[in-house]
Each structure stands twice: as C-alpha cells, then as structure tokens.
Length: 185
Image (cartoon, rainbow, N blue to C red; front, side, top):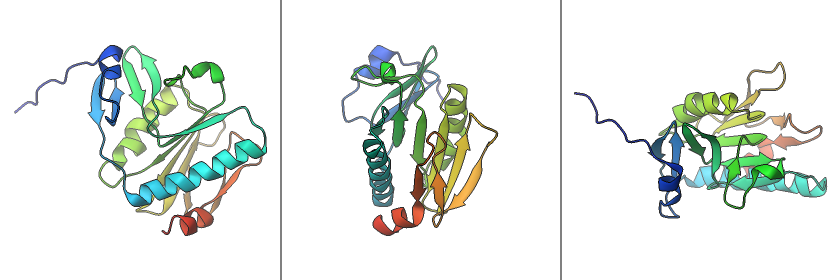
C-alpha cells in the first residue's frame, strides 16, 4: 500500500507553526522532531560553553547558537534545519529570526531513534548547501565524526577521549574527555 503523498509546505506555513514546534523541512516536506534526551542536552551545553568561551576570548566575529534556531538552506525547494549547534561568521546571514544560508560550522548530536538523519540526510544537505565543517557527536557509540568540506579531509572518526581541532579556526580544540566528564557520560 502506498503512503499518502506529503504536502509541500511554504515558508509562510512554516513560519505560522506554533513557536514550540520542533520541525525541519527537507525539499518542502516537513519532519517533526522529538524532544532531546538528557545526555543530548548535557553534551550540547558543554559544547556550547566551549565554543562560546573560545569566541569571546578571541573577540571573534562569529556567533554561536543552540537549537532550536532555524537555518534556511534553500528557498526552492524550501529546506530549513535546526542544528543542535551552529556557528555563523557572516552576520549578513542573520535576520533576527534565522540564519539564511549555510553556517560555517554545525554540530549534530545523534539521537538513537533517528541517527540516519544526521549521518545521511543532513550530511548530504550540509555539504550541498555550503557548510564548511560538520560534526556528528554520537553519545551511544561515544564517537565524533568530523567532516571538513573545504580541505582534503572528507571524514575522520574520533572517540570521546580525543581532543579534536575545529578546522574553521586555527587554535580551537575541543577535549571530549572534559565534555564527557562534565556531561556525566
């Protein structure tokens, strides 16, 4: 039996969703998201602190945002994502409501129920629309996969005891043994 064809959503329809709705849009088709787990949120918090502290210390021009914060990758077809963490260095992409265009750096924290979204679907869209660097943090596997789309580096796997260089910066390293310790993993 064929499943009913999902309607294409417009930007106006997306913008009219209730504010607490967790949803993304891929090629005009909406996908609702479940609330994240405690481990997910603990990792997100620790990563956000590390990246924010670095940017402040360096008096950098980039801004870091946690989910939920919309990133409109494309108008036609409408593609809007809510990465767990995003770093935007081009302030012209920010309109007070969302980021319009690809952020420089995105981190997704994989959830057991939909990890294929991060490893397959989002990897495709982030590379296609010009994200410079993309990390997938997988609490279940205790691994981090780094994709740096600007260099020769396609993907590199790390474990939760590694200190990992953020490739868009010259001297930012994130120590996942510290992240794990503070997130009680």
